[in-house]
Length: 379
Image (cartoon, rainbow, N blue to C red; front, side, top):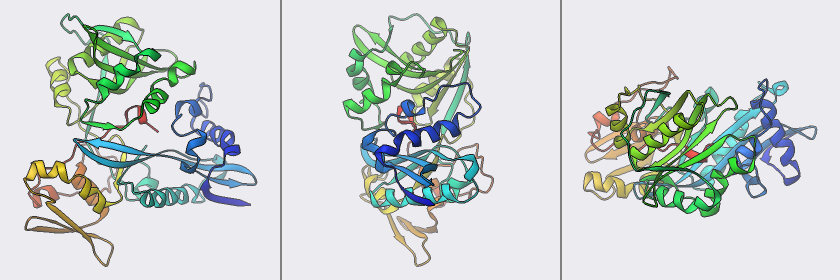
């Protein structure tokens, strides 16, 4: 008997986490850590956001959601994230994941979510009108390639007593998620409380004041590293990065920089790092265009000098009629998302629509909007 899609129940949580570990860690010599790695998903307070399909009393397909708020240059958006989408290998090809995605998007629309970020670039997500939007630059930096001037910056490892240092730095970021103190602790301290999670955070301090931090994920052999989140002074971020090479056996790191972080991008170039082509970090969809436009109005007003410079309405065919000043265009939701967040240089989906609406509507000085990245909220 097949049951779902529906929300998981508390007594089903261990079996759901086991399914996620079995699917994503299959064939890897890694402990079953995903339940601890995604504490914002797999807890008793998040059951309504764990969508499942059961067969004969066992979970066979699953999708995890997280809903929260994103502050973007003073505009507060409701954002939803989708990850850990999986189906047991014996039950694939039956449309279960598609059913979960439809259910997830329906719930998020009802919850007033404006923007959805989905981990990965599967056809499954494209069928939900997600596109490769936003522009990030992914640097792969080798040990020995960075040589910074001496400074008085002191590097310290994060401990539970340093949580306010992180908050002070993070609150200055123009694009960030609204996190309670408890949220921040939950995300940053998972590496402290589970020995199998290689997540460490380091803080740059000068004269007792925190300047920046980076949170890095280490694989067991400690030869590769990914910076999950950075915040604060660009110069201090590079000093933190250099210190990783100096104090560990890491040979290379991956640093993802959104296009709006010009300070860090320029500093990397001054230190000899060539900027790679831009790409999307996630699959993206604006699922409530009317609400989205209303919420980003303060940002647009600063760029255009006009209150509510855009108008949008649904056509009988389900498309969007977008007006800007005297210009007008009829577009679908995919083109709407691409207009506001931009198309990167590298696009995996060869069938993704190409749009030059920003030129057509005269929006090159206004758009794209800043690109939000996952950071420690990664699902």
